[in-house]
Image 1: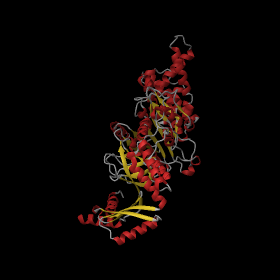
Image 2: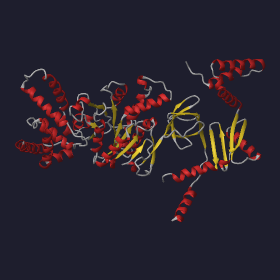
Image 3: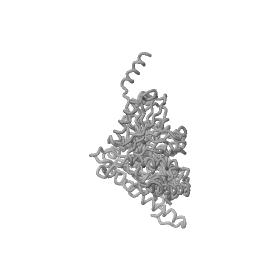
Image 4: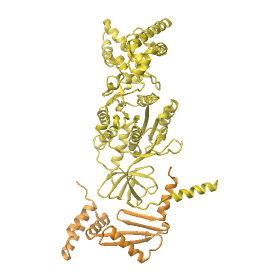
Length: 501
Length: 136
């Protein structure tokens, strides 16, 4: 055994060739709060990687006349004044490979889940120019999130950037996790980037994804709350580089940035420490570019360039519902729509607490399947009218028949859109539910029994309207034959349901 | 107001003293010292001097090299090395400082400005260590 080890070591050492080359060096002038001021390094590029004697990596961010401002990625307590800093000539890059799937990595792409090393195939730079116009294609394939309110009213397409925005504790992360859970068998790779989150939350989330069988196609990139701001700053770029690795193979990727408010705060911290001039809310002047260059990397490539896509779900946390603050307005203007979650709705029991009126998807409707468009096309308008009528009806009791009908339908629509956490609904099931709702089959079902009606209906129609399901699954639209079968199944189920209750 | 860096002061002193000698040079240097005092930059005089030295080196084609070895380098080899540095940097003059550090174990390390060529055994062993522990 020992001979075998010695023999192997000897072979390894024989294969080694020492490389003597001229390197650019500098010296640490001062170190503070994860930042190092370095003299020398005259030819260094912006965002170039540097190494410190104790093995830490840094990134040159501020190129000044007589010094370079470097952010230190890792433990900076061992770096001292006078230490030699070597320029690497490379932009910060991370190792990527197919074996990264199912793993939890830090902002440098190193595993932190205790499952051993990840065999690195290639390295990808974390900063890259977004794909150009000629390589892109417009969004026309849906992302099935499994959340009825989103898939029906605010549809998201592959390659879209849809912002999830709301106050704390309104279910932003839950929405994103549900979307990941629903990607099972949908040919989608998921990347979840956790920025400045508590480790306990990440642990819980990882366990949830594991239990749902979602880790097989998911990568978690984590820059925890206890890590330096520099790690939070680079984490989303690391995430998108991993996503690009899979997109380059022609795969579709869903990436979630949870959340970009904390990312902006981390960048503000770094910028202030680097003594960059503060602007509005003390954020630096380039905070818009920080997010626009990140989100612009989400795209759908055309067939000539591999055909992959990156769909981005950035999350923004607002303070007391203020969506007109600096970072929320910035990200709203960058993305292709937003899903607005409201505290009031959440506590009213409407979960997911999506405010349908304020939420919008600018490009997703062209990606929605025909069947869904047919059944949910007017849902948004109906709900908006319902809200208006609901408020108006509180002032008087004498309402005409059509208004009463509209109110009753609205109540049922709200009930149908309610959904439990970690319970994504398949698209074909959603189509059946919305079909029953919009065709008036639920109008005489009591509101408190809508959920039971819905689950029973799906179970029944799955057995008795197979043609309809097959048509929706295969051609994304039903035929007259399928519709007839579904109508009959709904009527049969309804009569048995009403007789039972 | 723009910050005055030691580099700015060094360049200004160089321009003020360029081509002067005798009383003219003395007055220019006196004024330079007064500027440093007035701008409260006397504490940065070392940096200013270093900038001045760099400017003069650049103009006279002088290269300063720091050479570190594990053992004392024989005179003949020193001359040969200086000649090679002169050729590589196309310099008129090479000013070298020689240091001995036993911890380098062997080989040589040459530093010119912010460029370093490390061919010491210590560095090679460090590279070997990295090579052996890297994921293959």
